[in-house]
Length: 337
Ligand code: SAM
Image 1 (tube, helix red, strand yellow):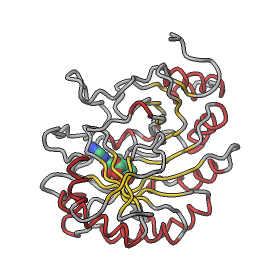
Image 2: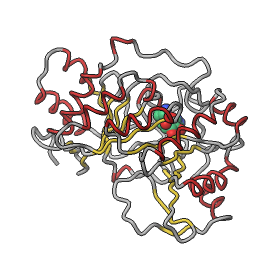
Image 3: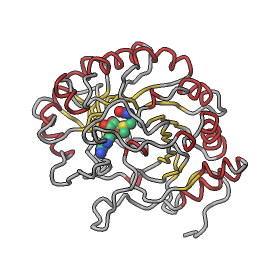
């Protein structure tokens, strides 16, 4: 095993994985306050000058795409739709050669208006987060009464061709865990692809409880009471979601079981935070500063090499099951989910 990172080529690590999927957080701010993510009062936001500017983001994504073999770029946050320069960033990334596939993870608020513009700028598809279809429950869970806006956002994304439109749902015991079949019926009726995400220890309040989380096995058992689920014949590859054909297909449902069925061995992700730090893993406790190097005048080769070195140090697994597991200091909203 080589001790030093490679000095050319892709984002490899010591375990033979190659990162091709880049998640870029555009802001740590959000217009919702999901109880499992952020406290009601919000968080101490990153200071404006610490945030990468639009040009800095495009430059770093360009390095990733041209020099490091990244083929997928996903914008996230915080809430990426509230970043003023979003459309311009998408257009500039779509103009890169080679052109990466571009997607967005969003809560959907405002997407009905923005979807056609984002599509025209080069966005390929979206993931919209939606944990409940009950308006009052939505308001309690997100601390904002915006369910109608999210549903409009979903419809707008589909109408604009940002397909397949995927829905991400986190189930919480005693909150919305009985809603899995209804969420799936809704997704099937509208042609959206639903994926349940196991709740992870990434909340700002450090309230995650392994014993209380709803597991993939429970989600599947609840769904199987109403639907026939057959293993998806399509190779999973590096996808975080394990998928099943619903009632014979072609519709699918997925579960991202990061906690109970970790998929670290196939992980192909690298992350860039809104303040320009590379993270090799959602759960990493170390980060590598690209913003400092970029602002100190580093050229693209040096930025690429710093990125390679950061990914070379990626750990074999996220270690949630290790008794010594430490939740990262940054919450999900500041990493980019
Ligand atoms: N604001 C955007 C959104 O709502 O999709 C993007 C950022 S949000 C952090 C990305 C995804 O992470 C959402 O689907 C959200 O439900 C999920 N998420 C947040 N905290 C989580 C946690 N502790 N465990 C699992 N998923 C979480």
